[in-house]
Length: 175
Image (cartoon, rainbow, N blue to C red):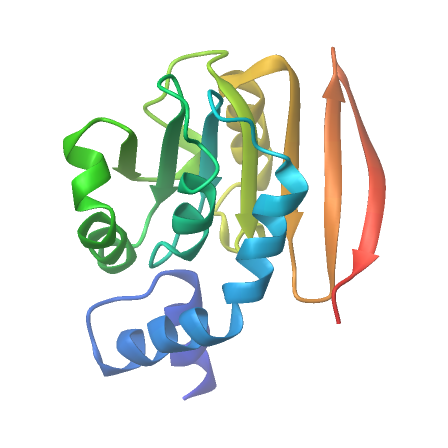
């Protein structure tokens, strides 16, 4: 039972356990997603990427800050079920090209090089099949002076890339 729940956390499917996981995400990750977006200090015309967007909680929070005409929101998730849920939630913004969501692996994102200003993700990197390739792919899509926020229930890590240097600047307890 626990193994099945763990598999659903990694890649929820359209099933009873997948539905329960989506409810769990919505209930327990709301504040985490909101705080990760706040820490990004998003500007109205930036291009922002959420990795492992799940049902779309973080996407909603980010979208409220991307109010400029050039502001774009991208999302990647490899759960078809979560991708469908977020796509339904964001369908109006997808139709206007403000939001673009991809179903796929973080290690193979169909996103151009050096276009993303900021990245955030919550409770997902430990499910990536290949962490090194995922990190390299994030590096590829990010502009040279980017920031990335990693949200975990135990803390929020703030990573800043200065040319080729990544430094952990901050680890804040979130409760």
